[in-house]
Length: 161
Image (spheres, rainbow, N blue to C red):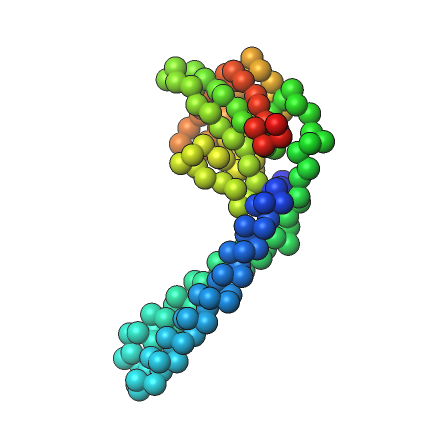
């Protein structure tokens, strides 16, 4: 699998803004709390100091992960992609064959995912399983909890209309 991460310009900008928020607002606030806790004395038994140091480490890890995503970003121009098959940016209506239920799934890039609202990463098992399929195709997608069987009912590209 390629280490490139497909995303829209909007997704890229959103991640960039998150990094700025973390670096310029959240991290300085933690540094201030660490300094205040340090001023309280004995660091060995200072729970506030150790808690803030742990928060600082976790925030730095989130910053590093977001920066890594941006460094591997591949901005996708969806207007140059085919319209008759599932690809990046597609909104797909599928029938879950096993439970006879229709779902609408949108395939998005990093920074745009929102699983509760049906926006799945193109790099997820679901996204990879649907990629390249056309209306009428049936697909069996291995996912961590087993297998999903879908029939593709509709393909649209709402962001390009």
